[in-house]
Length: 150
Image (cartoon, rainbow, N blue to C red; front, top):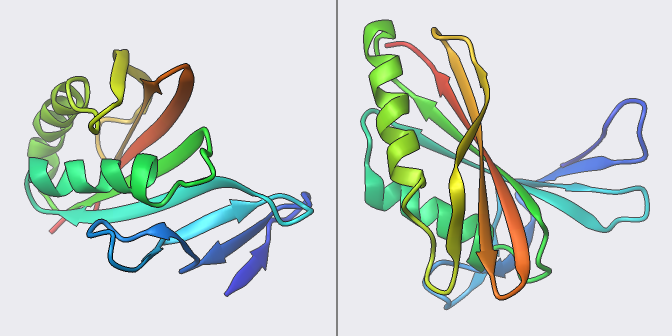
């Protein structure tokens, strides 16, 4: 499915193939990509569901948006974590998440600094920006954590 983003020439296309799967044996299937008015991909969106901090699962998704699903070298990605948890556990989860992503980068990549807080409403949403580098190329993932409740 493709949808026009209102007021722009950009489109959002879901379940777009691109890059390779994490096993490297088939084409990757990204949750969706944003394309500009001439059809060039400009951003990858990937989502994951968590009930607790599964570091290996999170790392695989970081690898997907930076390495496997991104052969064009798109500089920006959005990684949305849908978290099923109680309100009183949300802040603790997001702090552990933030600590983890500050030290994890795929092979041949490096983290640049610490995650930068973009938004935190304390109850349902936290957004942080993490930058990565490989060679002389720089990439940014916007990590958005959405508390879904139980």
